[in-house]
Image 1: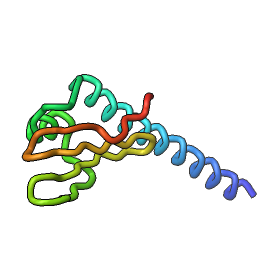
Image 2: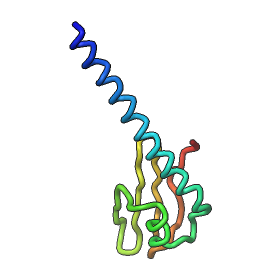
Image 3: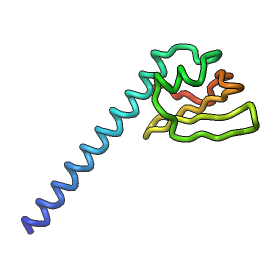
Length: 94
């Protein structure tokens, strides 16, 4: 019985540690976007350099694409036309 309890405690500790790590990653990404300020009119390279590589990149047509940054608890999608940000789809408040 004590072996089962020990394993259960290790699993619980690992779960709490992973939740903490994912929360920190999410908060760090949110803070990067907050420090950037207004995104409309900023260049694609500038945003990627500051916020890091996007989680997903989708081309809508030859001039427009959507870039998404995702973390547990945070998601932002930006529309770019010819490499210039046109707007934000969703930035939830922390």
